[in-house]
Length: 456
Picture 1 (cartoon, rainbow, N blue to C red):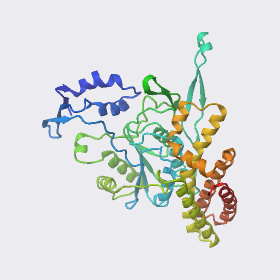
Picture 2 (cartoon, helix red, strand yellow):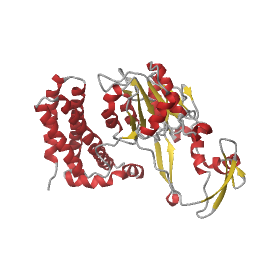
Picture 3 (cartoon, rainbow, N blue to C red):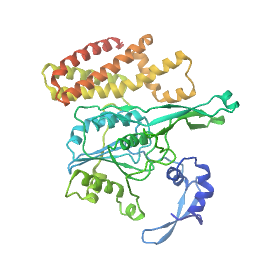
């Protein structure tokens, strides 16, 4: 696209769009600005001039319609390693189920010669979710991002004292399994890799665990503070500055790829994903896959990758989640009695998914709400953060009516989830002698949790 209503696109960007886009890097500024190029009054028209890959120009008349957001990409996509290369895409770290979905395919991934992780469309979420994925790929602890935040003291400022900072080391990511995937890893990045997506990339890059292929990331992360504005608006302000563990900056710059690749008009027109192609090429060289055809395999991945979804869906009621959890626990107990380790492995993992990703996040939100209320710290910011759990809140109040025991119930759910996951890990890693004592603890806590449920 070169012109809109006779005006060059570059002129429109400089005069009408860029002044109203707040961002810390050119690549992230452009990502937002290009979306705003064609905006106008509903029902009006614009003449758009486009230039084809062959250099031909065409004028198109377009009508403005109601604004509609495009459908977001699936949260988790997977392509199994039939050609020696496994592919996973994490398009958000707001998907609580992402670690359990990754765990479901981890055995297949562990057989692969190389792994491609695509976070080019990862708009962020929770850094802890990305760190859980990393925990499957390491044999020793690795550090996450360092961070600092301003310690603002108005009286000190009035005296002319220098601004002070509160600084902390980042989280330490611990290995999750005794048999991790230690083969070569390529991570695909770009301007759509934002916030927690960048924290994920920084941790892998800092410890040398992955080769980064693609374009610079957005270069924008940090805990946002939500502010209510007059007349109904909202604004967010970044409250902390993240860096690499060794202090290297990436905010305002972007994480820089090891191998830089940019899509072109020709590659887009031909339907080719040149960044994925380069990622497979790099991975094939590292993994020693002699007959790999990066272009053909990239095309196959694009056409055949599939979304994977969690056993708990957003629309599932608490009744349905608890019924599924009860069935999984009974199946796990039966498998344990029969000493069928493979079946115990599967049902332990399923029970962890149901409780850890279905019930626990909602219960954690309710527990946090009550805790903040007791401390007098429940404000607009925290209410907004907890808004999505309102439906679950009413269900929790019905199923667990004794709110005075909220902390104990919350702890029991977490313990049952962790112990069921430990059964899964022991079975998967061949530590069969450990399973009886883990299951004994799981059985005790399940019975306690079960006794708190209101079935009237």
